[in-house]
Amino acid sequence: MNGSRSEFRIFVVVALGLSSLACEGTERDTAEALQDSLSIVAQVEAAVWEFHAADTARNAEGVIALLWPEFSMLADGQRLDYGRVAQGSRAFMATLESFHAEWTDLEITPVGSNAAVSSFLFRDSIVTREGELIRNRGPTTLVWQRRGGEWRVLRADADHYPLAP
Image 1 (cartoon, one colour):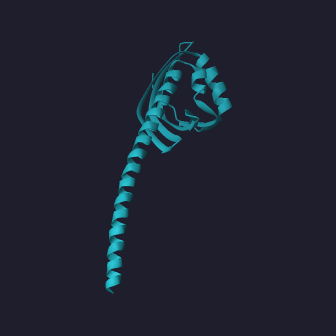
Image 2 (image 1 turned 30 degrees about the vertical axis):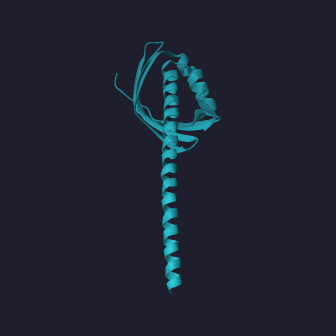
Image 3 (image 1 turned 60 degrees about the vertical axis):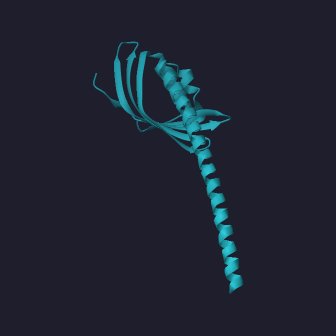
């Protein structure tokens, strides 16, 4: 029995030592994971604002360049693929005189080392070349994927609710 107690004490001491090493490793891993998450958030935030800049500059090619070829979107209940979005963006942007958009409540959530979800509320004011004022508000969610160090949108969802002029 004494041998068993001695072996048990050694086991407890070894187990406690290993658990403290595991905790140190876990803290280190947690710190690295937090740093990685913060880096992803910063990178995706930069991409979000690049998207906003292209959108408000009426730069359809700049918007399209931020989409992966497999991109698809649910816009106001309608499913659109990359081709329709690219064609629609070019046609729509060509009809605009000005495009002002405010994006607020931006939230970015990393969902892996190469993926993140951004969501925000938008409020925009668009003037067509014919002088028509179009004002909308609504939510947008973008699913970002990183390939070869480059972040682009893979999936999107946006709903537009008209605002009174």
